[in-house]
Amino acid sequence: MVFHPLLKNSRILFTIDNCQHCNIYKQFIQKININLNFDKQIDVVDCTKYYEFGIVTDPRIKLFSKHIGGSYPILFFEGRKLSGAQTRAETEARILAMCIGSFKKRYEPENKELDLIGKNLFFDKDCEYHNGRLICTG
Image 1 (cartoon, rainbow, N blue to C red):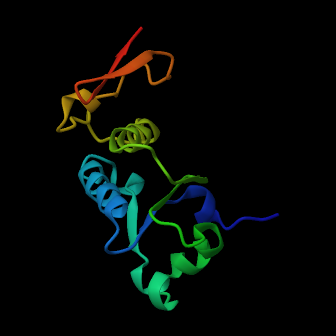
Image 2 (cartoon, rainbow, N blue to C red):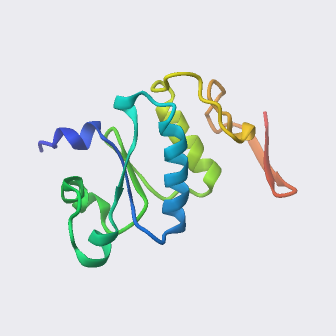
């Protein structure tokens, strides 16, 4: 099976309007793109017209349509399809970990609790919720 090169090398987020999860992804991607090298930035493609009316407004929608399957948001990152994170923190940590080698400079997140760059990203810690926050030890 031969894949289109764009399927293997792209960093594309497909979203629709009026989707709370899509808006969370878009906000974070916009913040992180500022610090990524230009050729490593994640493109955001609005699929609202495709989702509602079947109108293709970007040629990449047609190329990825069989992989999208009507579920949004979907991030295609260098050959991997990512969708359905549990929490905002999990989503941001996952994207940061994938982009770690693509930053122009050290990334400084607004929320210092999410600063995972250079730290052990393996989930081998004991975690519990205390007062609405996830606390991990170990």
